[in-house]
Image (cartoon, rainbow, N blue to C red; front, side):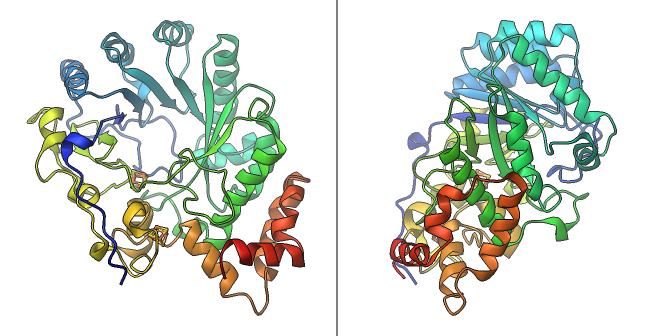
Length: 402
Ligand code: SF4
Ligand code: SF4
């Protein structure tokens, strides 16, 4: 057991940088991978008055930015009343939408609000695959029209792609469809919380790692002007090889309750909405202010009071455990049933994939990566030194200190 442990974080040291707010659970699509299994509105969703009060509360708690998502947030008729309140209070606004609800008013109003980002979910390069994943014919064409209109209006549009076995091999084609269009692209992997998602479609370890390789290769091949591409914050930390993937330069552990707060549409507050389990509800904004929830002495203890002894078997002997806190808790729970035990961190995967295969180095991984590379052609050439030859093996072993 690694005895390293982090000092408990006092609430005063935890700055609420971003509130991710499920504005409604209602959705007009039927996406197979939706982590919150959206469709109908959640029972007891906040009224407009309660939503406006929540904006006020968030501001009083020092919140810097709010991301309104769903379900599909534009399905609520009071979206712009609440979004305007967020901006009038001086907080940044991001919107995450499926891009299928559109009217001239939406774009006009969005422009007035000067959002930080308007993020549209796109999961494939073709209508056939995207609509299959999203469960509604015509979704792709509508979302593409939404993106085109955002671009014409000068809105800061980004695309979020959630990766699983259905669309892994389409990543290169999606990249080709986005580059050169001033669209920021965030790639994330799908978790297994959603009721509709067949669990056998989750990425296995090698596929998961290959998403990291794809991002790094694409970022080496394309300038940030041509293709502003980033992996989700919980993808790829502590890698000894891939240094240029994730949102954060340095991974400092799960941010649930540290800098991030999730609010469900019924007012339940959790450290992170991806921790889609009622065990993690800290309280409800109808009964407590955000300030009380955020500053509660026992609030978010799973991240704020983590110590090395709580790490699971994947992490307990890791040199990074004090700062890393065992990786993404959502991934950890989904894959192992316990917190602080993420089996898909790149540090661990690299040691497992490379070290255990030294008798037959790279054979299987290289085969899988090649499959992805052929789909796009050329993107992996610059990684050849790392993955493709004997020199690559030597270099990788050296970097991983094997
Ligand atoms: S093994 Fe665990 S503690 Fe170590 S880097 Fe990976 S997730 Fe973090
Ligand atoms: S549980 Fe995972 S997705 Fe949620 S804040 Fe923690 S690291 Fe991020």
